[in-house]
Length: 166
Length: 134
Image (cartoon, rainbow over all chains, first blue to last red; front, side):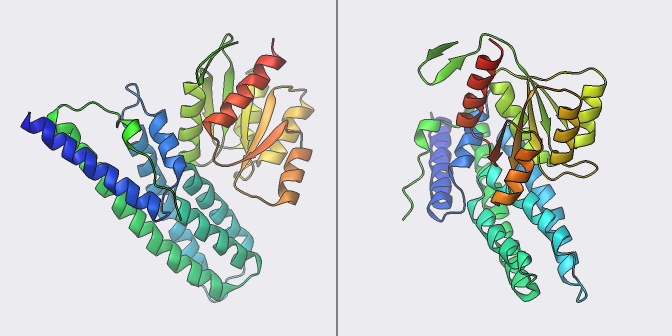
């Protein structure tokens, strides 16, 4: 029973963290769509997809920084391709704030505005770090919950409703 | 096709090909399609999709990304249509510009959607496939 209570507390912690991320606009309902795709045959689907996303995004961010630090940089078309990819994968996992920054970054890139691109890149890197930290925290709690009392994957969907964003 | 509540019962087993160089999109789209009963294959660029068809493969539905290395979505779509392929080819893109989407549609797509695909989009595609192959 104590183990069950621990698992319930951890579930509450997970829901609170997700609620915060929805409230901040960091995540949107697409993240819930991913959770709904997860089932017993693919119990680690969301975790796997998010990890692939972080691995691929790190490479894209590194590519973007590599392009922009070059003072002679002029290949905005190449930068646009990296941004399109990052925007597509970010929106597909529900990383709303990152997608929005990518939009602004792309607008700056379309205008060949290197200073604005550098500012956008810095925002993107900060946002990426924040999302990375928070989602890894989420998955750590989830792992503890699984260990806490034989709680079955996936998460109980009815307990996760994102608050209405203002 | 029977409906019960929010689920759709598929009468026919459809095959799908995901054409995208992004590993995240590959994984998510494959999961969506499998969940809706498709038999799904994944390739990383347009040339691999064309080569599959040239080798005799057929897919009821192709989800075609726009920007890919080696061969992009518009070029792959034109090649497939030029080969006489009449599969449902649906473009998927993160670019929201009208001109880019129109150019992609002009290559021979049946439709074009913004990423991310959702369960509602797959449901709609499934309904169209059921109409097309009834």
